[in-house]
Length: 173
Image (cartoon, rainbow, N blue to C red; front, side, top):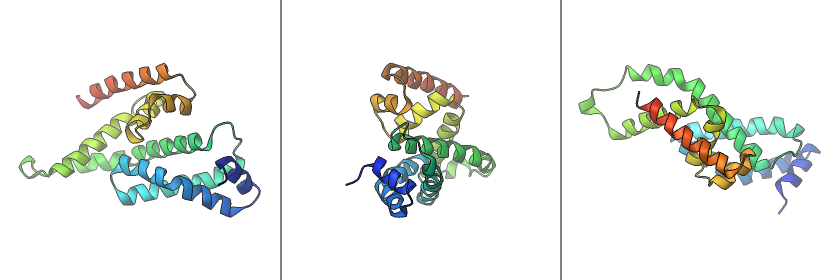
């Protein structure tokens, strides 16, 4: 089995099938990331597809300064941040349409809480937002987070700690 690096080089040389192999290899993780993020299969499919469309364009100029998985994960984070910004107004519009508390279904409440959490995460500084996203959505250990972000493990832990403190403050307002 060819490595990601070999497939990217082949793709850069004009082999479209090499890109298809990259997609097949990494689509399950990307889709899984967005499922955890949105809890909506249609949204997750759309976001994963959008990431790979961007990858198709970006990989032609990929310089191999980082691992492809790291590059792809950063693209997932960026796409999730764009999704949050794009949908923020939708979330606000739905608040005035909430049913009376006596009729509130807990699955809807859980979805609102999840959206409230991701809205709060989108307000964090970039470094904290990335650490929290990797920790929550991908359940990555600090060591992998540090490697993906090019920071040390302690810095990842500190960023996570500060982010959680800030999130608690934002959500409890």
